[in-house]
Amino acid sequence: MKQSGAGERIAVRALAAVFVAAGLAKLAGHEGVVRAFEEFGYAPWFRVLVGAVECAGGSALLARGWRAPAAGALALVMLGAIATLLRSGALAAALIPAAFLAALGAVALRALRTARVAPGVAP
Image (cartoon, rainbow, N blue to C red; front, side, top):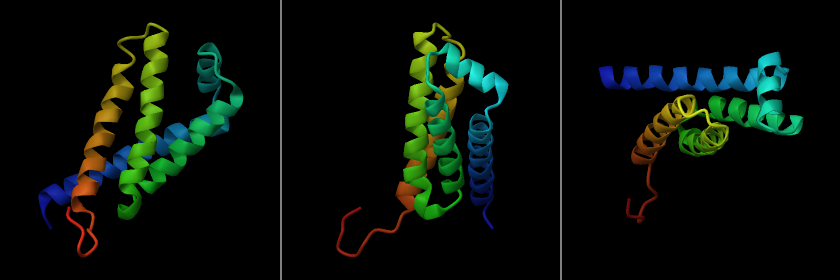
């Protein structure tokens, strides 16, 4: 077993766990999460939607065939988080979703590079 393969699996699993945990906190209505969404001016249904996308996307990161689309969906959530934090003036806090966005980009690129290409289709 290659070291890089094991490291990649660990990194993807950790990233998936973070998104599933964050999504569950939103779906469960954790007090701090509810308060944050209210302070940013978002409706409760939006918190639930983001939580569902995070749970589904985090879970889908674990399936090779779904890794790139899951990373894309989660990247959209991170772009929304960055925009929200920048709009509220929390510049330093926006670095956190930006770091996750970079990680998701790396996961998506790796998934797309290793995806099987149909016969007769140029990569």
